Image 1 (tube, one colour):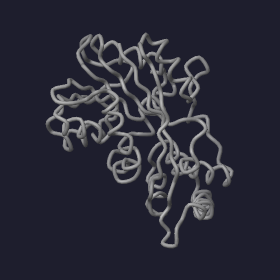
Image 2 (image 1 turned 30 degrees about the vertical axis):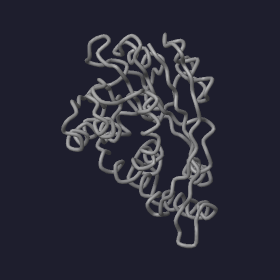
Image 3 (image 1 turned 90 degrees about the vertical axis):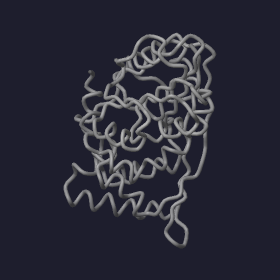
Image 4 (image 1 turned 120 degrees about the vertical axis):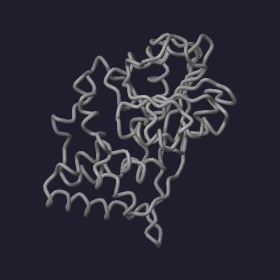
Length: 268
């Protein structure tokens, strides 16, 4: 495990229910397009890598697929087992998965590549478990982010919060551009064929307090940054969040937050 991977384990430990109640609805938006891109349908042997609370696994099962799901966080795997009892859910972390070569017809990974310390090695492992001719589809957040996704980061920045050493970034040799060209090049390097990427744009609607509850509950790296600050700094972050979110709010205080994701596809 890299230093980044160890940090991710700490960030996500025990957060399954908090994530399911906050950011999971946002991350569910690309799921139909993700499954379409991987041609997931009846009897498709499908691996959902980084299943989280089981959102993608449930959607794949509803299509008649034979679903296996994996997550590095035990609380996520436990929630996925309860949510999708028909799926085989295991605890494991990229870039090492407990499956045989060519075990799956399709592999999907919804916003997982943002959370692994060695993205190229993770993709090589996903290719290993995919049968020849099988399809991979994955989503990830782009950089720079859309304005709605950037809101929480802007509140932290305005409050003077900087990323501390205990929240490391990827090493330069492991990092890659979060652009269509960047992810396509990474897929090609991992040995995939017919790699491609498109941008998905949508507007996520959420109440102001609902959107704040994610970081307030400690979900993801932004939540870690909020929860580890002093009460005074947390209050300042919230004050800036309230002010900055006005530009997205309607008369009832509901936020319309523009978001974008990259949807990449490739074949073994």
